[in-house]
Length: 161
Image (spheres, rainbow, N blue to C red):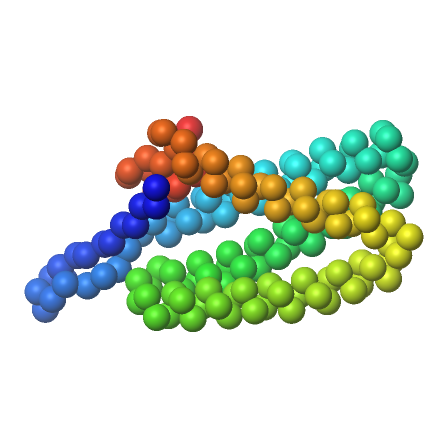
């Protein structure tokens, strides 16, 4: 089930409705991004440790390089989108989202080319490290979708502590 919340407050000056999310939503967005980055980092390090145990130090470094790409790309797209989301203007939010995704794709290509040159022989572990960070998105979706995973008033869709 998809939930969509709309904020409407009445401006004290003009009495006109304004669609601007409360400040707690910006804090919630930041908390969610930090949570996502932490989960990605933990998963990348765990995969690197497993790679080191089973295949050696070089594979572990390659897995960490792929994980770092995933973490950096998540941070870049979140910063791009989050910078405008506080404005509440749907057109500006959509434009920021698409610009963020375009920047994310371009940076992904550049970063993978650089890492491919460094870890040419171990590119499969690089991809594995990147894929591990993508699993964090599925964990977030599962966490949001479960009963009690999204609390009203908590400020964050993922912060159900």
